[in-house]
Image (tube, rainbow, N blue to C red; front, top):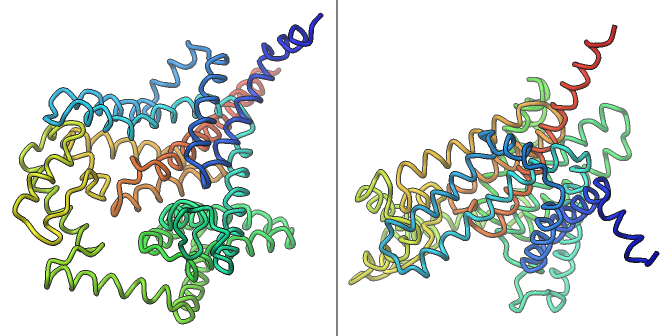
Length: 422
C-alpha cells in the first residue's frame, strides 16, 4: 500500500478532519495581528477543509438561529442593495466585500459548537499579540527593525488603531483567568497574567495612544465587571482601574497630549473649517444624516457613499471638501446604503450576539468583550466592515459563540442522560 493510500484513511477520519479545521482556525487567529494575506490564505484553507466535515441537516438548523441568520441577512441586504444603487457596478460589487466576512461567522459557530478546542484559537491570538507587544517595544528603541514601509513609533505592522484594539481586548480578556487563578490560590500564574495584562495597557498608554481605545476600554471593563462579578468585585475593580488610570494620566505626556488634541482639533474645525481628524468625523456625520433623510427607508444602495460625498463636496473647501467612502460610523455607514432597514438588522445582530454571552464562563467573557468593543468603537469607525476589526469580530463571536452553545448542548445532553438513568 502506497504512502498516499495509507494517509487517505486518516484524512477521511472525522476526528482528523476536525483537528485540521481547528489547527487552521488557530493559524487564522495567529495571523490576524500580523498579515492580511496570511489571514486570507488560512481562512480559505479553513473553509475548504470545513466543507468536508459539514452535516447539512445540522448546518441548516444552526443557520436558522438569530445569531447566525442575522449576519447572513446583513450580507444579503448588501447584495440586494446593488439593485437600487446609482453607483457604477464595479463600485457596487466592491462594496459588498466588507460584509462578506460575516458569512464565516455562522460557520465558526457551527464548527466550534462541536469542537472542544475553541480555547486554542484564543490562546493563539493572545500569543500572537504578545509577540506583537514585544516587537512594539523593540521598534520603540530600534525603529529600523519595523516591518512597515514607513517607520512609526512603536508600530511594527499595520497601524496604531488596529494594534490598540488588539491590545485592549487581550488586556481585558485576561481578567477572567486572573480572577479564577487568584480564587484557586494559584498566585504565581495569576501574577504572570496580571503582568501581561498591564504590559498591554502600558504600551497603549505610553507608546501607541488611540483615542478610540481611550474611550472604549473603560466601557469594556465596566460591562465585563458587571457581567462577571458581584457588587463588591465591581467596586474593587472600578477603584483599582481609577487608581491605575490616574497614575498613567499624570505620568504619560502622550496620553494627555492625545486627549487635549481632541479639543484643539474641534476648535480648529469650528473656527476655520480645517480638516482635522475630529472635524472630519463631525463633517462626515452631518452629511451622512442629510443623505439618510433623502432616502430613510432603504437608503441609497450598496456602494453609493463615495458618490454622495463627491456630489456634496462640489464647490466646498476645507473639511467640507473631503470625499470618503466611509463616514467613520458603522450605523451611518449602514444607514446611507440600506436605510433604517439596514440599521434594524445591524442592531438586531449586535443584540442577538450580546444576549448569547449571558453565562459566566470564559467563552461568554471573551464574546461579550468582542461585541462591546465592536459596538463602542463603531461609534467612531466602521469597524464591523473594516478588514482587521471586522475579522476580530467574526473570529471572536464565532468561536466564543460556538464554545458557549457547545457547552450548553453538552450540559443539556448530560442532564438528559442522568435523568434517564434508573
